[in-house]
Structures are given as C-alpha cells and as structure tokens.
Length: 143
Image (cartoon, rainbow, N blue to C red):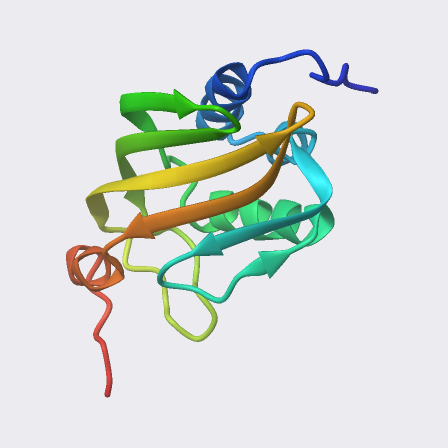
C-alpha cells in the first residue's frame, strides 16, 4: 500500500503526524516523514543515519516496548524547526540486546527538536534521561 506524501505540510503538521504514527506504533508511517538521508540523534544513543535505519530503530523500539506512548506537552515551531516537549509510558516486554525483559512500566519526560525541510524530517534531536528510565524498568547499570 502506497502512502501519500506530505510535501505541502507545515513543519508543525509533520510533527503532529509523527506523534500520531508514533502512538500507533507505525514505523512504516513514521519512515514516510523522514528524508532519505535524515539523522535521528538521541542524546543517550548513537545517531542513526538514513531513513531505512531510522525505520528499523523504530521497529525495534516498538517490538521491545509495545505500549510506548508520546503525550505532547508543548509543541513550538520556529521556521523549519519544531520543538516537542513530551511525556510517555512504556513497558519493557522484549530484550534490549543481552538485557532480559523486566516487564516493568516506566514514565519518561523529554523533548525533541525536529528540523523539517520540504515536508520531511532531515534532523531529529531527542533529549531524555536514560539512567532514570533504566532504573524504573529494573535494568542495572554497570560501570
């Protein structure tokens, strides 16, 4: 099934669509919002480069945390940049690498910055606290 592109959408509208697809756990839909050479740079992870790799990262995330949500708190646009302050819940149901699933629920707050050009996300920065998240889901951090 082919999806319609969102070429004439404002950056604000793209982020609203991103939230919708995210809460539907639709990695394919999310991928349609990214430019081919987009970068997703989450502060607690290595940057993911390229639309296909971003889609795989999202598929893995939704597989591990099938109830993950994004609840928007504030959305602000300035030109081609959109800032999204969010909160959300997730439960670790599948392993993360060698870390076994804990089946514990966590609550997070964070923010993301999306650079959108010609209706596509070209750069995404995400800021959230991985340490408190791991503590909530019962993952021990080793030094």
